[in-house]
Length: 238
Image (cartoon, rainbow, N blue to C red; front, side, top):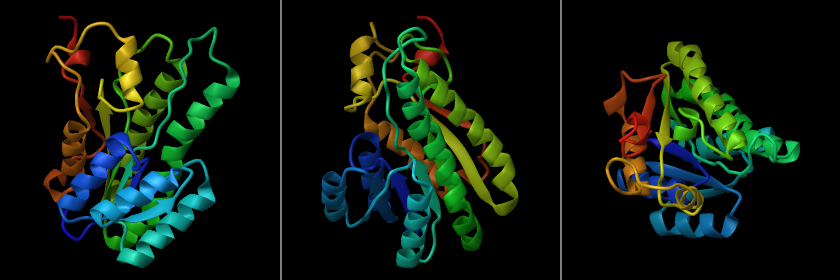
C-alpha cells in the first residue's frame, strides 16, 4: 500500500476508522471522509491522514473530495465505500421516508463515489474500489427491509461496475461483513440470537485485513467478487 492514495468514507468511527488505521500503517496516504468533523479530524491527526467533510449523498461534495485528494496526493488509487446507516423496520412498519434515507446513503452514496473516482483512477493508470456490503445483501433478515435492499443493490452494482471499469484497469469488489462489534452492527448483534459457527462476533480489524488486501496489488486479478467476513454465518445451519 505504500504510496497509494486512498479515500475511505464513514471513516470517523467503527470499521471505517480501523480501515484508515490499517491503511496508514501499511504506508497509504489516507483521506478520511465523514460527516462527523470532530471524530474525523481527531483520527486524521492520530494517524497522519487528511480529513474531508463529506455527505455521501451529495454529488458535488464527492467531486470536491476527489479533486482535493488528487491535488494533495497526485492520484486517487483506492476508494473504500464504507459509509452506511441502518433503520430497523419490516415491510409493514418501515416508512417510505426511512427507506429512501437508507437507500440514499447506502446505495446512491456508493454509486456517486464510484462515479466520482473513476476518472481520477483512469488518470492514475488504474485503481481499486471496495464497496462495503453486508451479509444482509446475501440473505434476508427480519425487520431490516431497507438495509437488506440497499446492500443487495450494492452487491449488484459492484459486479456491474467491475465489468464497466475493467478496461480501465479499475477493479471493483465487495466485502460483506456479518456480525462485527461496532456501534452500528453491535445493535444488530444484540437483536440476533446465537453466535456464528466460529462462536464469536467479529472485529473491525478482521474486516480491515480483507479490505487492505483488496486495495493492494496482491489482489490484482480479483474483481467483481464477493468477500464474506461473517464467521461462517451464511454457510448454513449449524
